[in-house]
Image 1 (spheres, protein in one colour):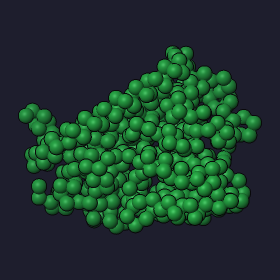
Image 2: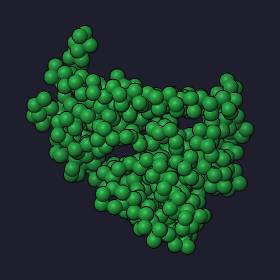
Image 3: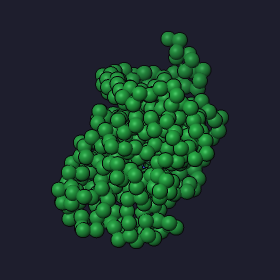
Image 4: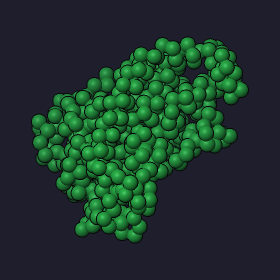
Length: 426
Ligand SMILES: *Cc1c(COP(=O)(O)O)cnc(C)c1O
């Protein structure tokens, strides 16, 4: 039982170690299903690289304008193959997921058009892009209107409401796969397909865009396999595999991706410019690692769900549910519980393990937020991290883990911290 001595020397009590081991034993079958999915997705990624004849020469970067950057073209070819789309825009000049979403929306909407969210209010940082909260440069300022159809009280999709909300002005539907900071269920790829079919049955030319953040490689199919015209995400989440230092992607139909390229760089320039400065190999190798990184994060999420569920906390999704993203939400009920959870995750990090996370007012969010992350890539939430807004029910959103051993240790440390702060008996 030597590993227990190591765990104890790294801050865990025998009670927490025993409790965690007992919970983990129950999860063997789930974990082997996840390994199977990772194996499948690894082959898909590998094939995309082979089909695009990835070669050493692609790892050389360009500078300046970045004309004829062969590595960038290979990278975008690989993403298009992986998502089975006509085209892809995968760029380090896309600074984050929010930026990628803003590019996709503002590139494909024109004054007088209406944007539809058929699954409730989107992620907090979208508020200012759309103009739900007034903001400089929002779509609202450019005369793009917005309409939203909430999910029904039981978490199901309001298909009738969606049909009724589509008018001749409806140009684009933004469908968020992951729940983000909401407590609604994450959508499965199959559900996304049903929403798209519903929208297209009323108005076939509505551009159906999916915010794919945190959902990539969790299932066998991606939204572009079930009718999505555009799919958007961040490279410091799932698909960067922890190696991508920056970036975002937009994949989909060529005409819509082209609009995005013109918006990101300039009309007339589009995809032709954008030097890679030598980081193409990190973006590609990160994608190569991504299936197993996502699997580690999923195992961590399920482990956390099972652990906190056993202690009577409300968890979303539950430990037994099928997963459609890597996020685990746990209602900690009190600010002390939320902050203790985050302190434990922070203390388990490889980087900045000695600092104490404190709540603060983050740009783009409407309440104070506490964030725990000791990451190699600043703010990368594919690395083990936890965060939550300081408002009832004090939900902590937990995600990431570049490998399972670290995810497991981080969750055990969170429990240690919560047990001490909230006086819980195991
Ligand atoms: C993370 C996330 C975003 C925004 O991405 P950033 O990289 O943080 O800007 C948008 N939507 C969802 C669902 C997300 O999880």
